[in-house]
Amino acid sequence: MLFLGLLVVLYSCDDGDLQIEQVDFDASKIESCPGLEDLAQTTFFFKIDEDEALLLNLAGGLIQNETSMPGTLASTIPEPSNLIYRFFSDNVTSAYFCDAIPPLTPTVVKENSATAGDISIDTRVDTLTADTKDYRHTISIKNLSLLNDKGEQLTDLSTMEYGDFITKPKNSAKLEVPFSNYSAVAASQCITPPIEGTMRLTKVAIDEFIALDIPSSANMFANVATDSVPRNLDLKDLELFNYVVMDMLASNDLACAATFGENIKSWRFVSTSGNLKVETVAGAPDANGITTYTHIITLENMVLTSGANTAAVNLAAIPSVEFGTYTTVQE
Image 1 (cartoon, rainbow, N blue to C red):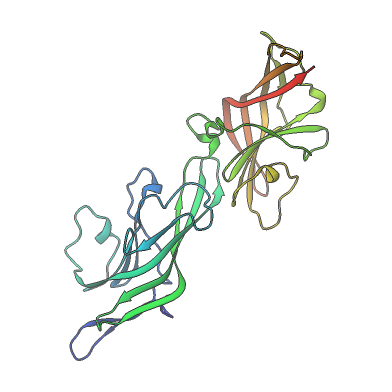
Image 2 (cartoon, rainbow, N blue to C red; image 1 turned 45 degrees about the horizontal axis):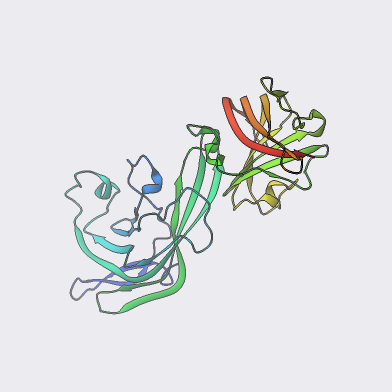
């Protein structure tokens, strides 16, 4: 609630002036104009209540397709962001704000610009689909001040939720190069793997992680160069590869956990077919006679399946995913 109710317009019987005493757009949905290929580039939003509108122009860079740290996505009013409360001669629609040629009616009767305010954006994953990783951007405004027609400064120190905006970037499996967002991330081995009899290698990228649960009995990382014949492991029904997205910032500890807390929402795709290939290259022994072996891990023709509490969704086979490298040493 803003100003204990959020903007109600009163018409003076004496002079017909519009006067702001309270503002109420709680029942109005947040809207934006279509047409942008990248919804994260959206900076103009509006809320309509019949013949009134609350317009928000955000500074660029505040809508980002990744989970945010508290306080990192913020701006101030009137600069570099601004908020305008506008009155019209009749009911207004989104066409007035979005059409290339705005309709002639209704007309603007009066508008008032906010003189102060603190904007924050809280961004979290809303859902994971077979194609997209949808983000919910919650836009909030605190310490908002408006100057009404009486010259009075109306200020509310509480927090108003302006609204939620959804963006739908491709998930990591659907990037032009699948999981290429992990290419610069080094693999980490879990001290205590969540599945007995396996070793888990993980990579964390902001609000998601990928993991490999490799059976110890498969001996995929033997200290022997593979030369022209790599080691292979059939992924059929193993659920060896995991792609997990969370509605919070991920971490190595979470990536190594067997389960997450009840307050953490997560989505998971697992491998149900394909091939795990490991190519091993032996380095030259060092001065102490220790040889380092670099194991290059690749997943081929991998099919990922999402099940959980709904019908399973299969992603088409991914020709190749370069997981990265893992090193071992031999004295």
